[in-house]
Length: 120
Image (tube, rainbow, N blue to C red; front, top):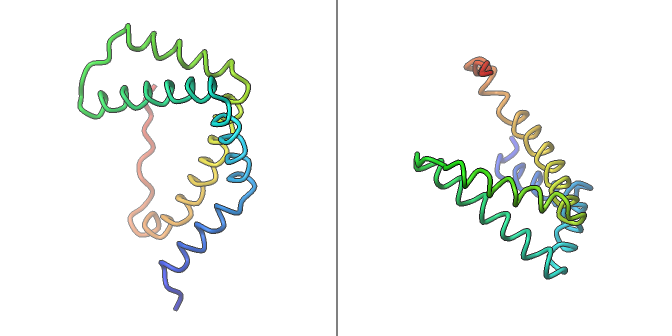
């Protein structure tokens, strides 16, 4: 019987060797090697983290903070290298989400699929 952890490490290796991860690495290095892009990207990440922390702690996010975050997002999306990095990150996340769905299938089969939320 295969060891689950061995399979997980094989999966990790497959992700590292995937086209999606290689493209993400190249895009990440392009941003990190450009001082202004790097600073802009780090500012964007910091803003994201601050807002996520506030949400997790149940704190109110002000309209001003929302507008500030939107400005930062617009700014990074206009930067070609950062925009590319975000696209590649999204591609890899899709792969990882698909893999996650596949590996949690036994639980879904056992307990039934979680109810889809129909929030509008």
